[in-house]
Image 1 (cartoon, rainbow, N blue to C red):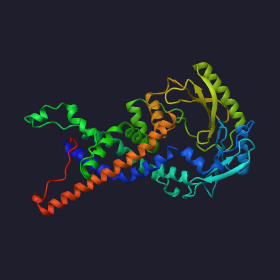
Image 2 (cartoon, rainbow, N blue to C red; image 1 turned 120 degrees about the vertical axis):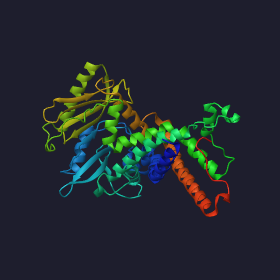
Image 3 (cartoon, helix red, strand yellow; image 1 turned 180 degrees about the vertical axis):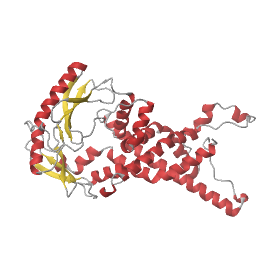
Length: 420
């Protein structure tokens, strides 16, 4: 295909994505420091005074949360209580004919005292709801609940277009083939010498040239992270495309999501939460002895009613492949092991490991503060790419319109090739 085709594809893809990318990039910059910002905005909910006393058992805290909302469902129990932080329980209340609002309940881990609540889905810029709103805006465009998953699906499609455009944009920065080899000055330059200007910003040029250089150079310098954000965005919101693609390219094991669903969700499992934790611990210990890893601390116990299973997740050592955690999934009635994963699990595929790396890089959940700063700065870079891209399109469109009305003698055309 001719280069002009890819130029046009990049232009229209960029225009289609620009508004969405500005939204997700701006909110993503803030969400890189979501925990720190939320703790500053809502210390009465998220922090407690450290005390010289043990915290309550996490399952007792879950029981106290359940007592505050009789009839509601609390299907996961965090088991790793952080010093100085409150205990959060996600309470799914019952509505008329359907699930009610999701309530985030915060308890004092030392006493079980109720500190406060927040409701997921509330559109509010109040300090209590601000981070929740930004999170929904980032992942679902904060569309109303009655629209279902349309916001997430739309962003998944945008992420897919963005992924494809990453490769198109990179191609367009490469020096085009030289058609006239008779030019001595051009013929003396190596391929790298002709590509080198694409990595630079010439601030001495006019506004158009500076914007063009920013657009091209920023895209090159941040290309790897742009692809990380784009393809992980497909993974978050467009699983029907992400999973088959990863399976075809790298292999992908559907563990443990491949477990069959029940005809009806499980209402009352025979194993209560304390019995389930005991079973999970026993199964984890068996897996650790068999596979040669060490359980460091438990992280989460959850109930999947649609499949009728509990899952116990734990931090383990060695943690490889993007901090893989050990997990056992077992029947919620009988306690029979249904699935298990652990660091270095040979049943997993490269696609699973790559997917975890992508997700953790996207959410800045590894590499500590440096990664959070990088993700925050990437948000500004993506905004700059979107704004400069629209500016370049507008200036070219204005120049073409001017030449049509004034004729070819109106002045030099406002065109800058991708190889300059």
